[in-house]
Length: 193
Image (cartoon, rainbow, N blue to C red):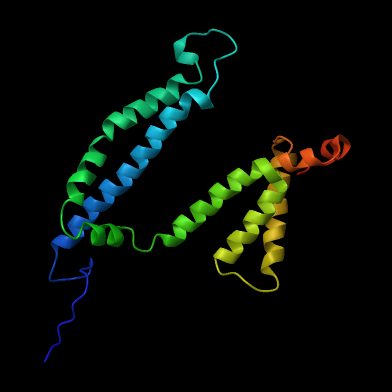
């Protein structure tokens, strides 16, 4: 005797082979709409994010031209995604399909969010301090706990900092927090943080 258990359909359900196709369409529409939204925000921020060139070399060599062109074509080509998502959202079970489409991506989104926090922190704390904190957070998020892993993270961070600062000769602006110290401290420490 078999017992029937009610549950949300999944990709593995043999009784519902069409559910997998619905998830793929829903995942494409949802992720495409999210990326389309990012492109729209980037296009709207383009006048703020770019400056005019130092010399008048023509429209094609202005810093805003090629990003505007790429974003514009992306928005035109991807306009079908928000339209498709609105149409799909009217169907019953839409929320379940969205959840099933992105099931298991929580960790990836956490790593992405941590990286965005790191990028913002570089401006305020400096490259070195932000990199140390970011690498320690990555090791904790990945489940590597124990006596030696924080030291491994620290060694990897110093190798990265040396590669950027010494090997590639990339220097970042003085961190914001050094403005609260005397200028001599900022001048001395700013290049290393």
